[in-house]
Length: 211
Image (cartoon, rainbow, N blue to C red; front, side, top):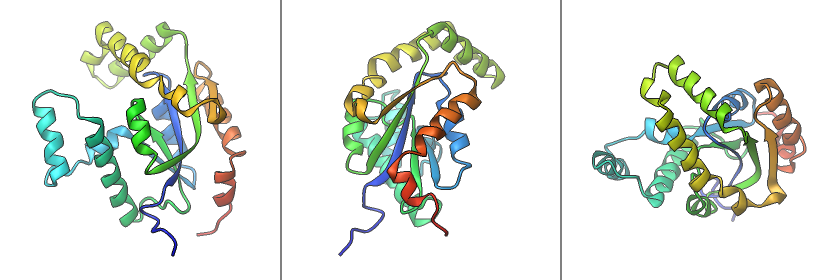
């Protein structure tokens, strides 16, 4: 008997890059293309149901100003994914999951192995940290999040990425890694991502399905 689709490992790609590298922009564009479902880590918390046991645990950590443990983060993610499948907003048999902001470290990456199969890691590379800081300041001012425009906050976010998230690249290895110059125009970055996606067997299997 085949495994139920909501418990099977789901096909996915991961967009990885420092704050300001354009992950959210590229993920949002891919979400408009059939056969892709963009899932930002912020979705986990914005759509949190505080009436559930998992939701209440998250609130408890937040009230104490503590980081949510990796295990709880992945549990929340998995619970939300199940809801998306049940409501047919996300169809894992014909959609490739675009992960953005999750996993945040190697431990989370290991835990996700039970839920997803990563076919490609797109690394949006921007070695120029001054450019990243400029983008983050511009975005914070545009969205009127003045606290996020602070140089201290910006440098802390970049350092956190370097220390905790970037090592994920080593976890997945070079075989499925695609480095893309994030200093290019957003359109050129998207072009490079789409060109690589066309070569993925996981995408080719579902690209022309009629639903």
